[in-house]
Image (cartoon, rainbow, N blue to C red):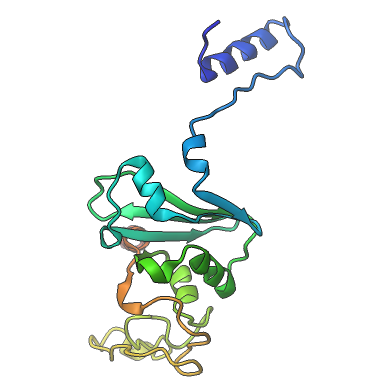
Length: 213
């Protein structure tokens, strides 16, 4: 009939409503557009990752310059995702890894970076604050030194609104200042998560506005 996938699904849905076909009848279509790129990905121990990043770029016709891309890593409760974002937003997002089996911890991040050969490309890293604690080896939870840029002390409440300048964090030594593991990436190429900052600022602004009213 020459129907597209969406139209075919709509057609069978209408047929079921008119009782012309049984309820267990389904319409599926086989997609093949992933085949030119499937050879660049490997599935190992529940992690699907790109094992040949330069080859993937050559296949899609995009010049591979690692400094022009940043690695966005996001770990939700259901899955772990890693993608490449272009700094100038001139190219689409490229998926690097995906898993629904890896746990949300330091060792999973270590496995992810090793499989992606991160030390070879040294992309800039971006993620939420929880992800930063994994990548930089800091302790999770209500800790004394939460910031990975400075030594802002969360427990000195009277200084939070009076002191503006805090000592910069210059080293990550295991066992000191809430550093539990060796950092997985260079702290100098870690970027702040702008989306989470904007959402946090808007939340504080809206809450203040409602309290003021």
